[in-house]
Amino acid sequence: MRISELARQAGTTTKAVRYYESLGLITPERLANGYRDYGEDDVRLVREIRTLHRLGIPVERTRPFLECLAAGRAHADDCPASLASYREAIDELTGRIESLTARRATLIANLNAAAHRGSGVVPAEGRGTGRMDYLTLPADLPVPEDDGAVDHLPGVKVPSLALLDTAGRTVRLDALGPRRTVVYVYPLTGRPGTDLPEGWNSIPGARGCTPESCGFRDHFHDLLEAGAGRVYGLSSQDTDYQSEVVERLGLPFDMLSDPALGLADTLGLPTFEVEGMRLFRRLTLVLRAGVIERVFYPVFPPNEHAQQVLTWLRGNPL
Image 1 (cartoon, rainbow, N blue to C red):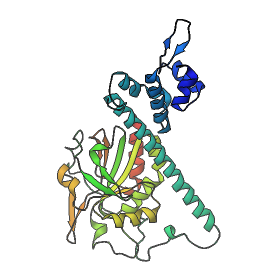
Image 2 (image 1 turned 120 degrees about the vertical axis):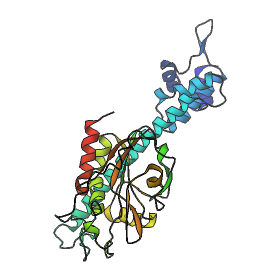
Image 3 (image 1 turned 60 degrees about the vertical axis):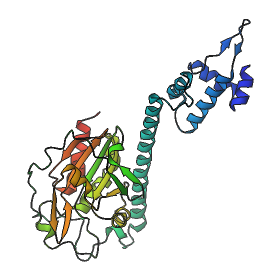
Image 4 (image 1 turned 90 degrees about the vertical axis):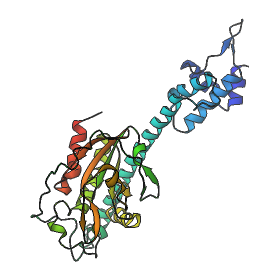
């Protein structure tokens, strides 16, 4: 068939077909008179290119799918190279979504600040709790010591643990992909109007979950630019509790809930007990390709920890 007929059957333009041909994605036969002769296989290839392109895969990167069809597979994504291309496209899309989410959070914060500037009305997120200011850390907090509790973790495979996040999705920790995922693990986030456990300030490493989360919020876009594909906070608090924190603090990332402390049990993470509750000790994991690449422990001061992780990411680019 001629190029115009191919374009009509595939639902595209002759200009697009010529572009695909210039990239070597389709190679029509040549008749004796020099004219190109396209077949039904070419129609299928062009349709596949258009389908993938609509999903956000650049035309230039559709080759693995077309080669899969050329190898006789029934579907263009039946080959390992096609699956790898899917994962790469998903990771890139995730990065763009998270970057846009961070920008949205910054715009909302700027809007709130501008709307209340000079009005004498303090935005909700800036008000004190009336009992305890969770955003300010006491000067005399005890410094946690490195007891070697996480020395065994670097290089360990991430367990196939599925946790619920504050967006209502189930997240598999061992299936987060080849990009770095930062998971900061914390014991318990304070909530305005609710007392923290008795003696909380005297427990090394306990106080400071809210300032730590705010630090990751404020550095979120920088962390993505430094190579983090995702950022999660993780605690044993339930998803409803965490969702309130995400909304109140304007966090541009989701929290993971592990009420059974499954991550602690499978990896041997340090925990402590207070008022009958078993809680995570504060630490941060950097996960990549299903393996624990880096562990930050102990974490102190928590309000500066996001900057510490950012410094490490910048100093260890991939």
